[in-house]
Amino acid sequence: MRRLQTTTFALILVLSATAAWSFYKLSGTGEQATEAATKFLAALDKDQREAATFKYDDPRRVDWHFIPKEGSQEREGLKIRQMTEPQRKAAHGLLQSVLSEIGYGKVTKIMELENVLAELQKGKSGPIRDAERYYFAIFGTPAADQTWGLSIEGHHLSLNFVIEKGKVISSTPTALCTNPALVMDTYIPAVPKGTRVLDKEETLAFELLGSLDEAQRKAAIIAAKAPSEIRAAGEPQPPTEAAAGIAAEKLNPEQQKTLQALIEAYAANLPADVAKARLEAIDREGLGQVHFAWAGADKPGVGHYYRIQGPTFLVELVNVQPDSAGNPANHIHSVWRDMTGDFALSIK
Image 1: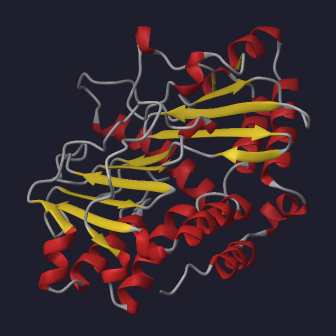
Image 2: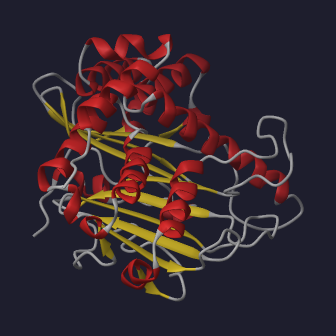
């Protein structure tokens, strides 16, 4: 069974980075995040630091979600709108430290899409739409000899990390979502028509599904209708059901290559060392143990869902909701989770 080419993939990640990311290559992501978090906290005043910091064992560390939250459900942390320009720069430095250039581009575009939603929602009631309504929360003390956590979260985004003694030991849940999935018109200049934040995450999956023969499709398709949401959204740990769908060992070499590229599209959102660790964990167990499952329509514009699951990870993507302009199945929720335990907490 062909194994994941983790070393080659990590090299591609490094070589594709621009000069803006070059200094992050000098040491590990955990060390860079610790330094960036320290600078961020130093830029805040006393009240802002109190809003942004929590004890490491605070139960809010595992209270994650990508839905709009308001009122009594307000997210923990300090939001970008409450920051000065120098503080925002420090916050984005922290965000950059835990993402690849590709991932940072996706995340900032997800934030910009809030302005698209605000434009589409004009004159209508609905959730608050604000591209600066994203919250930074630090759990514990960022230091080389400490264990601490980081949450960066808002509508359609949830990034969660645990750093122990300068090393990233957990990077899940990682949720990137997008509405519209494909921007059908130019509503604001910053997000032109044709923008598609999670392009590979959807197109590669359709490519893999379309390559399956009749027997393979029968194994891969688990339901005629897509579910309304990814499983266990907002719960501290991923669902523990056995993997469903077709095993990668039942795919031909070209299909395995497409599956691998799909997995890598998710891993590529994180810095090279974190992405490499994710892929090496999959490789140790063997690509053959990874399963690909599909539910719903086999074409864009109609509700669809897929799941990729192996012993160490779970990816889910669902696209069933219309976008805010009314275009059907144009609103993606996606997540990567750790099947050994999110938030550096073992699944019991």
